[in-house]
Image (cartoon, rainbow, N blue to C red):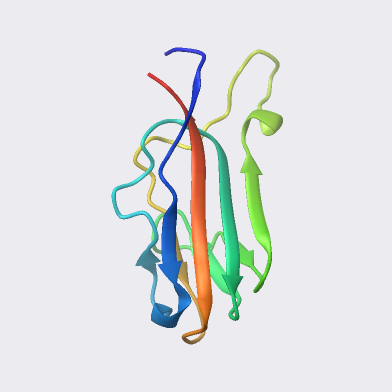
Length: 110
C-alpha cells in the first residue's frame, strides 16, 4: 500500500427520497481503505446512518456534518485505522425532506 491519499467521488442524495428503510448512499462502496469520511446533511430532516444496512450506527441532525477521521483514532502508535474498502454507507429518515445529503471520503491508494 502506498502512503498517498486519494479523494473518492462525492455521492449526493436528495432527501426527498428519504424513507424509514435504509437506502445505499454509495451503492458502489468505498473505493479504497478510507482514512476520512465526511457526511454533510444539508437537508431538513435528521438522518440515521448504517454501515451494514441493518444496525443504526450514527445520527446526523439536519444541517450538521459527521466527520470520521480514522487516522486520529488509530491505536497503538504506528498503526493506521481505516474503514474497509467496499463499505457501503446507508441512510434513512422518518420522512422525506428538502435539501441534499453528501458523502465524501479520502482513502489510501493501493
